[in-house]
Amino acid sequence: MLNRITSQIDFNAEALKLRSERQRVIAANIANADTPNFQARDFNFREALGNATRDIASPGSTSSAAMPRSLATTDSRHVAAGTLSTLSLGAKGTPLQYRQPVQGAFDGNTVEVHQETANFAENAVRYEASLRFLNGQIKSMGMAINGQ
Amino acid sequence: MSLFKVFGVSGSAIGAQNVRLNTIASNLANADSISGPDGKAYRARQVIFQTQLTDANDQASAGVRVAQVIESDAEGRKMFDPKNPMADESGHVTMPNVNVIDEMVNMISASRAYQNNVEVMNTTKNLLAKTIAMGS
Image (cartoon, rainbow over all chains, first blue to last red):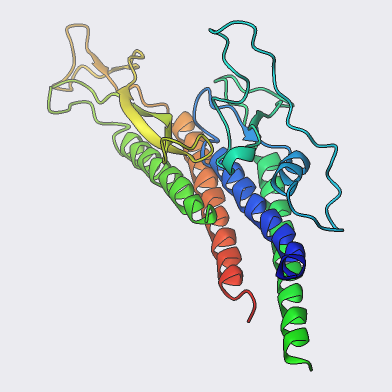
């Protein structure tokens, strides 16, 4: 019963958590805009949200198709894909991916500051949107409990 | 809450850019220092940035640190000034190898990077303030 009440909140809470993770990844990109050989990173948000909310039975989450991709290891010395740079998202980790630069830099740095700034702003707005959804749900639940 | 780690990441970047700005200021200030403590002309200094993980288990929290400050070994320009006590046998004085134009460009780049990181921290601060107010 309570499960059904909180499942919708859980979905938005996971989205909020992932938004904050992405905020951190993009902040690291901007911070390293002048570090030689730094590779800009990001992750597939859709895939990550699918991984994070697979267990939540919710009418809002339709993410059955998003299975994490993995490389076959046929030798014991093979390094499994994603082991080196896995986000700290629990067991359902989504791998960080490297961004393809439009125009590479001379020092091997692949950060494009204007792109990252735009991503950062976009992510901040989406974070706020998730927050607002969450607030609305909490408010309507409170209204249902109080009966007014 | 991973948003708090943004302050660590951006803070380290601001610190690194700060060192870079200091180095540029030192280079510009010493653009005409023909004799230092070792009796030789000043050499332009450059900082080398390096990625530093603020959390060893977390590849996403990549901050910045200044790995080292190197001295440029470019040839300093020679100025003909036989009356100068620092002049060599041919009457030339070795000037510092500071390229003022390079330093000014470098300064603009450092200042923009600094501003970017401050902006990131401000946005994150606002988001956190709104998160704290959640449900009220």
